[in-house]
Image (cartoon, rainbow over all chains, first blue to last red; front, side):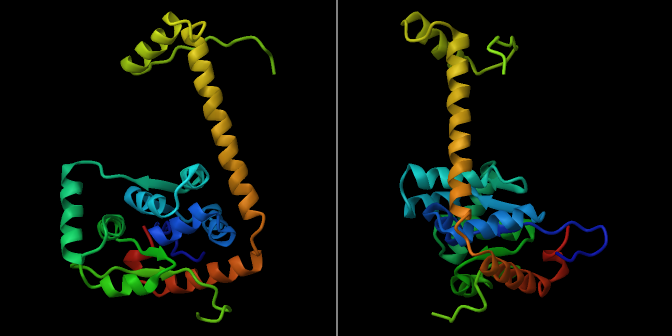
Length: 148
Length: 87
Protein backbone atom coordinates (compact mmCIF):
# COMPACT_ATOMS: atom_id res chain seq x y z
CA UNK A 1 0.00 0.00 0.00
CA UNK A 2 1.74 3.17 -1.11
CA UNK A 3 1.14 6.22 1.05
CA UNK A 4 2.30 9.76 1.10
CA UNK A 5 4.92 10.25 3.80
CA UNK A 6 3.41 10.16 7.25
CA UNK A 7 -0.17 10.01 6.02
CA UNK A 8 -2.43 7.23 7.21
CA UNK A 9 -4.52 5.40 4.62
CA UNK A 10 -8.11 6.55 4.42
CA UNK A 11 -10.68 4.06 5.67
CA UNK A 12 -12.76 2.17 3.16
CA UNK A 13 -16.49 1.83 3.80
CA UNK A 14 -17.84 -1.70 3.30
CA UNK A 15 -21.25 -1.77 1.65
CA UNK A 16 -24.01 -4.36 2.00
CA UNK A 17 -22.90 -6.27 -1.11
CA UNK A 18 -19.60 -7.07 0.61
CA UNK A 19 -21.29 -7.89 3.89
CA UNK A 20 -23.77 -10.21 2.15
CA UNK A 21 -20.86 -12.25 0.77
CA UNK A 22 -19.28 -12.37 4.23
CA UNK A 23 -22.60 -13.54 5.69
CA UNK A 24 -22.75 -16.16 2.94
CA UNK A 25 -19.29 -17.39 3.95
CA UNK A 26 -17.71 -16.52 0.59
CA UNK A 27 -14.06 -17.44 0.99
CA UNK A 28 -12.55 -14.91 -1.39
CA UNK A 29 -14.50 -11.90 -0.10
CA UNK A 30 -13.77 -12.82 3.52
CA UNK A 31 -10.09 -13.37 2.73
CA UNK A 32 -9.89 -10.08 0.85
CA UNK A 33 -11.40 -8.21 3.80
CA UNK A 34 -9.13 -10.03 6.22
CA UNK A 35 -6.05 -9.26 4.10
CA UNK A 36 -6.94 -5.57 3.78
CA UNK A 37 -7.25 -5.45 7.55
CA UNK A 38 -3.97 -7.29 8.06
CA UNK A 39 -2.21 -4.82 5.74
CA UNK A 40 -3.37 -1.89 7.82
CA UNK A 41 -6.31 -0.64 5.79
CA UNK A 42 -8.92 0.83 8.19
CA UNK A 43 -12.36 -0.56 7.39
CA UNK A 44 -15.68 0.95 8.42
CA UNK A 45 -18.81 -1.17 8.73
CA UNK A 46 -21.99 0.93 8.69
CA UNK A 47 -24.37 -0.68 11.17
CA UNK A 48 -27.36 -0.49 8.84
CA UNK A 49 -25.36 -2.23 6.10
CA UNK A 50 -25.04 -5.12 8.54
CA UNK A 51 -28.82 -4.97 8.94
CA UNK A 52 -29.26 -5.12 5.16
CA UNK A 53 -26.89 -8.07 4.83
CA UNK A 54 -28.55 -9.86 7.71
CA UNK A 55 -31.96 -9.43 6.08
CA UNK A 56 -30.53 -11.00 2.94
CA UNK A 57 -28.76 -13.93 4.59
CA UNK A 58 -30.56 -15.12 7.71
CA UNK A 59 -29.24 -17.58 10.29
CA UNK A 60 -26.94 -17.95 13.26
CA UNK A 61 -23.88 -18.81 11.18
CA UNK A 62 -24.35 -15.74 8.97
CA UNK A 63 -24.79 -13.59 12.06
CA UNK A 64 -21.58 -14.90 13.55
CA UNK A 65 -19.65 -14.35 10.34
CA UNK A 66 -20.85 -10.73 10.33
CA UNK A 67 -19.91 -10.36 13.98
CA UNK A 68 -16.46 -11.61 13.07
CA UNK A 69 -15.89 -8.42 11.08
CA UNK A 70 -15.84 -6.43 14.31
CA UNK A 71 -13.04 -8.60 15.62
CA UNK A 72 -10.68 -7.51 12.84
CA UNK A 73 -7.99 -5.23 14.20
CA UNK A 74 -8.56 -2.28 11.87
CA UNK A 75 -12.33 -2.51 11.45
CA UNK A 76 -14.86 -0.43 13.28
CA UNK A 77 -18.63 -0.25 13.20
CA UNK A 78 -20.27 3.08 12.42
CA UNK A 79 -23.53 3.34 14.31
CA UNK A 80 -26.15 6.05 14.26
CA UNK A 81 -24.95 8.00 17.28
CA UNK A 82 -27.55 10.68 17.78
CA UNK A 83 -30.61 12.46 16.42
CA UNK A 84 -28.52 14.66 14.14
CA UNK A 85 -27.06 11.63 12.38
CA UNK A 86 -30.46 9.95 12.20
CA UNK A 87 -31.97 13.03 10.58
CA UNK A 88 -29.02 13.29 8.20
CA UNK A 89 -29.60 9.68 7.18
CA UNK A 90 -33.23 10.53 6.40
CA UNK A 91 -32.01 13.37 4.19
CA UNK A 92 -29.70 11.01 2.29
CA UNK A 93 -32.55 8.50 1.82
CA UNK A 94 -34.77 11.29 0.52
CA UNK A 95 -32.15 12.60 -1.90
CA UNK A 96 -30.91 9.28 -3.24
CA UNK A 97 -33.92 6.98 -3.00
CA UNK A 98 -31.57 4.33 -1.64
CA UNK A 99 -32.64 1.70 0.88
CA UNK A 100 -31.76 2.74 4.45
CA UNK A 101 -28.79 0.34 4.62
CA UNK A 102 -27.31 1.68 1.39
CA UNK A 103 -28.11 5.24 2.39
CA UNK A 104 -26.24 4.70 5.65
CA UNK A 105 -23.20 3.61 3.64
CA UNK A 106 -23.54 6.74 1.49
CA UNK A 107 -23.99 8.97 4.54
CA UNK A 108 -20.91 7.52 6.28
CA UNK A 109 -18.83 7.81 3.10
CA UNK A 110 -19.98 11.39 2.55
CA UNK A 111 -19.40 12.51 6.12
CA UNK A 112 -16.02 10.81 6.45
CA UNK A 113 -14.77 11.63 2.91
CA UNK A 114 -13.93 7.97 2.31
CA UNK A 115 -14.51 5.64 -0.63
CA UNK A 116 -17.06 2.83 -0.66
CA UNK A 117 -15.78 -0.66 -1.41
CA UNK A 118 -18.38 -2.78 -3.15
CA UNK A 119 -19.13 -5.75 -5.36
CA UNK A 120 -21.83 -3.72 -7.12
CA UNK A 121 -20.17 -0.62 -8.53
CA UNK A 122 -22.97 -0.18 -11.06
CA UNK A 123 -25.49 0.62 -8.37
CA UNK A 124 -23.21 3.21 -6.78
CA UNK A 125 -22.34 4.85 -10.08
CA UNK A 126 -26.04 5.62 -10.49
CA UNK A 127 -25.99 7.47 -7.19
CA UNK A 128 -22.49 8.91 -7.12
CA UNK A 129 -23.77 12.39 -7.99
CA UNK A 130 -26.84 12.44 -5.74
CA UNK A 131 -25.14 14.24 -2.87
CA UNK A 132 -23.32 17.59 -2.82
CA UNK A 133 -19.95 15.86 -3.08
CA UNK A 134 -19.47 12.85 -5.38
CA UNK A 135 -19.27 9.40 -3.84
CA UNK A 136 -16.09 7.53 -4.75
CA UNK A 137 -16.26 3.80 -5.40
CA UNK A 138 -13.76 0.95 -5.33
CA UNK A 139 -15.06 -2.18 -6.99
CA UNK A 140 -14.06 -5.61 -5.79
CA UNK A 141 -13.44 -7.76 -8.83
CA UNK A 142 -10.92 -10.19 -10.21
CA UNK A 143 -9.58 -8.45 -13.32
CA UNK A 144 -8.69 -11.87 -14.77
CA UNK A 145 -12.27 -13.11 -14.46
CA UNK A 146 -14.41 -12.70 -17.59
CA UNK A 147 -17.11 -10.09 -17.04
CA UNK A 148 -20.43 -11.76 -16.55
CA UNK B 1 -4.03 -23.13 34.08
CA UNK B 2 -4.83 -23.07 37.80
CA UNK B 3 -8.36 -23.99 38.91
CA UNK B 4 -8.18 -21.40 41.66
CA UNK B 5 -10.67 -18.60 41.18
CA UNK B 6 -9.44 -15.04 40.74
CA UNK B 7 -11.17 -12.30 42.70
CA UNK B 8 -11.98 -9.25 40.57
CA UNK B 9 -14.10 -6.17 41.15
CA UNK B 10 -16.42 -5.37 38.26
CA UNK B 11 -19.14 -2.80 37.65
CA UNK B 12 -22.28 -4.03 35.89
CA UNK B 13 -25.60 -2.49 34.93
CA UNK B 14 -28.22 -2.54 37.74
CA UNK B 15 -30.74 -4.58 35.74
CA UNK B 16 -28.11 -7.24 35.03
CA UNK B 17 -27.08 -7.35 38.68
CA UNK B 18 -30.74 -7.74 39.62
CA UNK B 19 -31.15 -10.55 37.10
CA UNK B 20 -28.09 -12.38 38.43
CA UNK B 21 -29.44 -12.09 41.97
CA UNK B 22 -32.82 -13.33 40.76
CA UNK B 23 -31.17 -16.41 39.25
CA UNK B 24 -29.46 -17.12 42.57
CA UNK B 25 -32.66 -16.60 44.59
CA UNK B 26 -34.58 -18.86 42.18
CA UNK B 27 -32.00 -21.58 42.62
CA UNK B 28 -30.91 -21.38 38.97
CA UNK B 29 -27.33 -20.47 39.87
CA UNK B 30 -25.25 -21.04 43.01
CA UNK B 31 -23.93 -17.48 43.15
CA UNK B 32 -23.69 -14.20 41.27
CA UNK B 33 -20.06 -15.10 40.59
CA UNK B 34 -21.24 -18.31 38.90
CA UNK B 35 -23.60 -16.31 36.69
CA UNK B 36 -20.79 -13.97 35.62
CA UNK B 37 -18.47 -16.94 35.09
CA UNK B 38 -21.06 -18.66 32.88
CA UNK B 39 -21.62 -15.49 30.84
CA UNK B 40 -17.90 -15.08 30.24
CA UNK B 41 -17.54 -18.74 29.32
CA UNK B 42 -20.36 -18.34 26.79
CA UNK B 43 -18.66 -15.23 25.34
CA UNK B 44 -15.35 -17.07 25.10
CA UNK B 45 -16.96 -19.99 23.29
CA UNK B 46 -18.76 -17.63 20.90
CA UNK B 47 -15.55 -15.74 20.10
CA UNK B 48 -13.72 -19.01 19.46
CA UNK B 49 -16.56 -20.27 17.25
CA UNK B 50 -16.51 -17.05 15.22
CA UNK B 51 -12.72 -17.22 14.84
CA UNK B 52 -13.00 -20.85 13.75
CA UNK B 53 -15.72 -20.06 11.18
CA UNK B 54 -13.54 -17.30 9.68
CA UNK B 55 -10.46 -19.50 9.67
CA UNK B 56 -12.29 -22.38 7.96
CA UNK B 57 -13.79 -20.09 5.31
CA UNK B 58 -10.65 -18.14 4.52
CA UNK B 59 -8.56 -21.34 4.33
CA UNK B 60 -10.48 -22.20 1.15
CA UNK B 61 -9.61 -19.00 -0.70
CA UNK B 62 -7.42 -18.89 -3.78
CA UNK B 63 -4.75 -16.45 -2.56
CA UNK B 64 -3.55 -15.64 -6.08
CA UNK B 65 -7.07 -14.55 -6.95
CA UNK B 66 -7.38 -12.52 -3.75
CA UNK B 67 -4.04 -10.82 -4.46
CA UNK B 68 -5.27 -9.84 -7.93
CA UNK B 69 -8.44 -8.41 -6.40
CA UNK B 70 -6.48 -6.42 -3.83
CA UNK B 71 -4.17 -5.08 -6.53
CA UNK B 72 -7.23 -4.12 -8.58
CA UNK B 73 -8.75 -2.32 -5.56
CA UNK B 74 -5.46 -0.55 -4.78
CA UNK B 75 -5.18 0.57 -8.42
CA UNK B 76 -8.64 2.14 -8.21
CA UNK B 77 -7.80 3.75 -4.87
CA UNK B 78 -4.68 5.29 -6.37
CA UNK B 79 -6.90 7.17 -8.83
CA UNK B 80 -9.02 8.77 -6.11
CA UNK B 81 -8.56 12.38 -5.02
CA UNK B 82 -5.96 12.72 -2.24
CA UNK B 83 -8.79 13.63 0.15
CA UNK B 84 -10.12 10.08 -0.25
CA UNK B 85 -6.72 8.37 -0.05
CA UNK B 86 -5.06 9.70 3.08
CA UNK B 87 -5.80 10.97 6.58
